[in-house]
Length: 603
Image 1 (cartoon, rainbow, N blue to C red):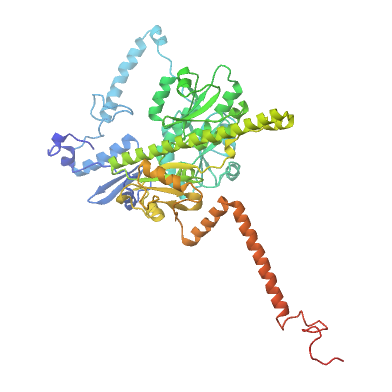
Image 2 (image 1 turned 135 degrees about the horizontal axis):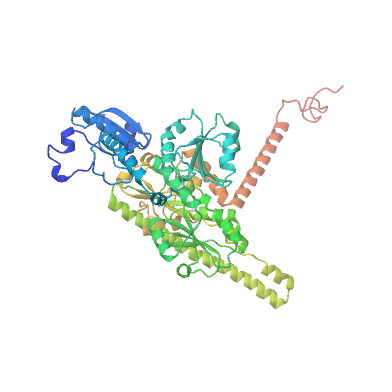
């Protein structure tokens, strides 16, 4: 609780008078302290006395509940010092309390005494005054009670499947410990979404068929439904995470916002990733329908807007419409559409969006770890928020390295594409010179598809070295207390690099990072990798990596081993047949073991 500095040593100050204090602990920064007190739900409020726990509550609480709790504690410390009925509490959203009665009980008495006067004045009011009364606003039909509504197979079909209303639904089992731990946060989220978003829950022990139809494979499963479409929520289950996702779902439910240049600049101040759909008067309804189908999958990931502003087109050099672009920290990337149908291919567009909807340098968390690490090399900065200056500098250097690497790869991409275009044009000119119509048609039919060219994808991220201390120490052998470090991780092959070509640790500087990436992406890498697993598992992934990188060589080696094994087996069989006196093969032979040359008696 904040207090004036001038009262800090005064006996009349709140803390000195009651010997009672308020404090808060950030469980992200001080995980060990929270684990020691078994804090598994957020928020959790714990009362301590003489170092021992007295009382605990889980989940968000109403203001009057917390006020009554504090009043009980203060009254027990200083009996008779608190007023009966407790203090007058402010309304939600207010920053002060209106003057008037000291307690809620007095306020109620005042309201009771004023009712006769109000009744009298009401009888004297004229009909004209009654007509002037403003009509009450229509109440929203979405989650009117602010609770998570239990759903059955029948009510689910009636209220969720057959309507266009948005629903956030939890599929759970009563015996599931994770479901029980999440329940207070889910209930609080439902209260926050009162009048904004329908919230429901399905007991899969009772509604087994419904859960099977929803393809529920684990508990709890959280699904967002709207108009026959659905998307699964895979994020964290804290109260703040659930509310943020629900609010994003409500915002997207309103459709794709149309923005101008000034509005977009304001969005850039708060959003790291923004998808922009450029359109003009010729854009068809089919194009807009395809755009609307994308909104559901973007909940919790990125913002999607559309625009016809010429200033926006000028800034991002747009000359054809419709066009889809993503701005990540102000750096644009474009969706390549060869034909108009490619802009309406929702699956193809969504796959591209998934490849670019993370920030340029995202924070690695449990919810996005697979998305960041799988299928690519990742430059991972291991940082500590406790060293604020070093944290800011290191994060900026990693981001600058990422931007330079993206610029370099974009330039190489353009060169490769131009080289393919030149080769196509050369074939066309050659066919025209020879007047070969068949070759000319074949040359013109060549499609330049840059997706067919294999490249080593490189991503960038950072991780909180304090929060993930144990994982970082066991995986990379790094202690963040020794300072900020950088590793280049190859999750698919369970290996990593933590030193430069000179053997020095990779520092969070663009020079050190870019020089090392250039050596690592070569085939084979010019720097020896370390394994994130045991020796035998590491050998397996090395062999697998070699086979995937050199398939024809691996095939030749495999055929060679098969031939060698076959020849070795045949030679063993020959030695066994001709060099062994035992065995049933020789017993039925009339000529005996030596083919009739033996010195036995012949009858």
